[in-house]
Length: 249
Length: 249
DNA sequence: TAAAATAAATAACCCAGATTAATAGAGGTC
DNA sequence: GACCTCTATTAATCTGGGTTATTTATTTTA
Image (cartoon, rainbow over all chains, first blue to last red; front, side):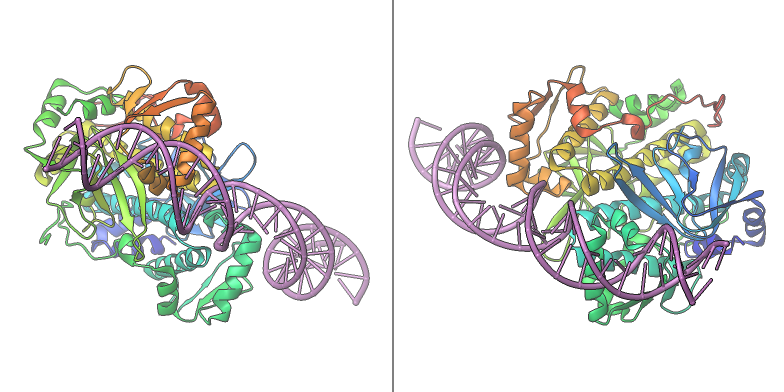
């Protein structure tokens, strides 16, 4: 089930049958991981690129005192470590937050895509650049926004990403992370995350219970978060079969 | 003077004469900017990629209340907006922090490199991936480290980046940003930046005066910062003329 | 070289979010 | 359905870094 990745890439460019076929055939093996397992550890040089097929994962890194920062969430359709095809080893770890199934795309398939499927290659690089933009905006989030805006911003981001990957129709998504885990991502303590969630609930912006988040008032939440989806770069580009942009302006 | 970029890329792969020639010829035009000028503004879709030839710049983004977050520093040899060849528009701005000269590399040159100079293309993508890793580690820095460690970490990063670009031999580099600007990058107030700098000076780790930083005790500073240069991915890769990795393990 | 403007240094006081601790639910599991 | 463990909730207290204000260098400009 590679469809969420396809759905996501379609937001960047149209893909033809043979490109879709190539992508569907790319993960040659699946691996199942339990909650808490590391998909890839810092320092490793995985021989294949991992694709989240089912479940949730996060990018994370620990300091020597044991405190951990979550640097990004990975959902169905996200590629975990495409960048490691260029770098030598992981500078952070990726951990499953639920029971998770990952697909393994051998590096040769990636190289084949780069050589023979330029438009697909361009779409994959686009998703890498979006990951970079998301990382930059997390700096902004942690650095500048109040606790309440921070939580709201993360929820807005996840809502859009779920919609983009075609995983939900409405405004309800599964959210398996604990308040402690949210705290690691947003640099807040679990206690304060709890306080903020109460406030967002009171304002009628969200419902969050039993690992399920419903954004009751998306516009209101965006306002609190000062959320602007531009950084997710969802505007469809016109790209020819060689991967070249046409009609750029 | 494109040498800092060349120096940087050489840390990833060896380049041959014709590749070096291509890169040297890439910036067809230069532009001079004064301190405070925007090199590229959020929302723009620059027709050329900007290369810092001289001076300092920063990636930044402002919230509606006027507060600004610096999301990264750009030094000689850095490409500002390579990612915009894939995305439609900038999701943040780039501002000159000193009088700055940028070279403009037309998008056609980038496309030519991707098509005909695979090893060079791979090196450029490597630098993009390093930018992404730097962004992720800034999340860690702002999110988890104490004020003192944060400042120390930034100084360690800049020291290594200056060394990698062949801009300095020793441990002294020009540092034109004000304490207020450092604060915008590290999410600290100018007052607190000042307090922290005093402490780092007292500990004999740095000398900072007249826009010049000397790291007196690099090892000590790294210890305070818990700095590990792995995320800058400086290990030389063995890459053939087609840009394929050889001898990966 | 004096005046003006900008940046650095310091002090006094304050607050958003941290810390610690204790309680209450929710899911598992046997 | 009794037990156990993990997660959420709440309250009381504390602190790292923020705020505001003033003074003292540096630079820049004229």
